[in-house]
Image (cartoon, rainbow, N blue to C red; front, side, top):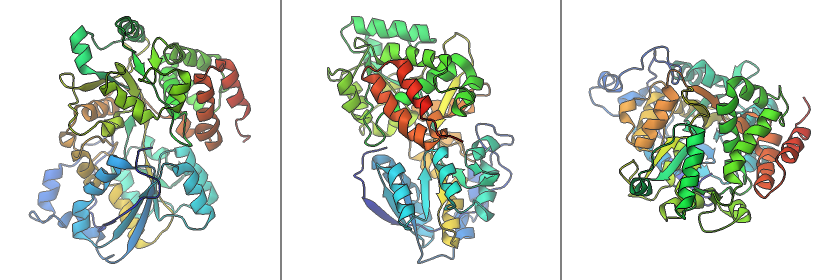
Length: 458
């Protein structure tokens, strides 16, 4: 859901060769210490940059296509992270990013022209593709790398009918409240520690004549998804993981009274014109028509003081933006409902699936599941991963370090984005469209009831 025009194809040479490090576990539930990347590199070949990739050489001249929803600056960083891999081998990776990924991947499968590899942002879509029989299981070196570097809880999201199909790639922490750091310094505002303090801060900001919250939910066919994050974040904080899990699994109705209450709590901000707008003086209709990226940029333009998005939004700030409490923008996690509650974190992420089972495809998938890729990408900024081989010292940005801290907090309650786990008809369909109607003024209970009514039969 980034900003490169659909259909732009970027082709880079990618060599598939990576030595799999054994004996390391994964974040956030690591059981063993990750290997020292510097020691691994030294042992791998006395400074030879290609030694770490030797296990995957031998596929020179082959091409692997990779289809993804990642575009813009984030896609460019992905490709930059493969530079050493590119120099050391001869696999060509044909990368295509789409702003209509969920629709287009289905069309490519139906046309019998699927990509070799795809980065899927919804475990629900992974399940649907696996049930269609179009995915190659994560076997051999892919499974070895995945089980060495990711916790069972993360691998469970890519497992269908006891078969591992998708390996985690990255993680983004939802409920990151980006704020105008200069404005906070000017007024002496403090980061809120509870939801009540957040509400009080919003009112205090409004009293200065500044719109507290910038909001935009337009995202092409995915319009509405930013509002779903608000509901999920509030529900997890207010009701805890058991209720959240039951809701996601449809063990309780979509319109359970506790879900209605969470939506109303979020709506007290999102649907109050004194507290939320598009950052340019617009009303609810403008919020529905404003791309979420544009709404965020208006924070830097003085259009608001606060903007709720994921940790990965760091990739959208203009080059040169100083991120930190003493800089231009900074971030804090949405606070708990009650003081002293354990951190509650909703996360999203991409999962790597294979739609072909050629040796060079397996090599690429294994590389993307390994620590070499994770550390190379993390060093470029604006990215974190639950990969247990990720060296925290290689994470350069303050926002990314905060995200990693939340992922690895020993008491944190971490749950995957609910809409991404639900059946596609709901999670990437009626939930998105329902939240758009809701922000435009539809009754909360009516909207949630309609989503519940449309939940697909088992």
